[in-house]
Length: 119
Length: 119
DNA sequence: TGCAATACTTAAGATTCTTATGTATATTTG
DNA sequence: CAAATATACATAAGAATCTTAAGTATTGCA
Image (tube, rainbow over the protein chains, first blue to last red):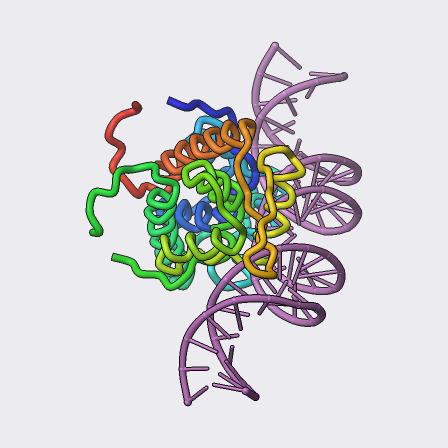
């Protein structure tokens, strides 16, 4: 089995929105820093979302109506919680479906799996 | 099952080199236009490599010593055949392995599959 | 008390793609 | 047989998305 320390940035490119939307769809409510840490933990450090990539993406998703925010004070520090909207939930489903289909196509194209059937 | 006409460009981003190298590794000798058509056919049009993306990538791979070229005349028209080098073969294997690992990680992260084991 | 972790923001630069344009030959079709 | 389409290459401008970097400030720990 191939072990890799961290994926080349090209690979993760294009999946960031999918990851964020899906995580918020399944977990309900999260703040930015929490997202980076959760993804890092769940992937054993293989996917590390940088802050420079995360926050602009969160802002874009909010502006687009797929996420909503509520600020909360933890002591003196602001924390911005994100929740997914109805529209965001729909987008999340679509993006995951597209990704699943993409994986199937790539597996065939790269000849990774024996082609079982056309189902 | 989800049917999609063509993937959003973000998804394919980052897999172009992997696709090209692997195809040349398995098929031996191909020219640029042939690569675009083969990928289009194999993916039922879901992945369409544009020429603006293909040729610069081929040139970069050649410059990097992963591909070698030989020109051939088909009538009056030049055709540039690409073959993979030893170094390119190694890179192809690495990139495919990384992609397979990436798929596994993403499936877990997106909760697409039931987690069977940690193998 | 100083360093690491938490928590957010934004700007500059790199990479990789799309879109567009250019050139030219070969084939098909009305 | 002329026009449209397909084949075949190349490259430049612009868009999108990420990395790197720099800034600000609070909190926890050794």
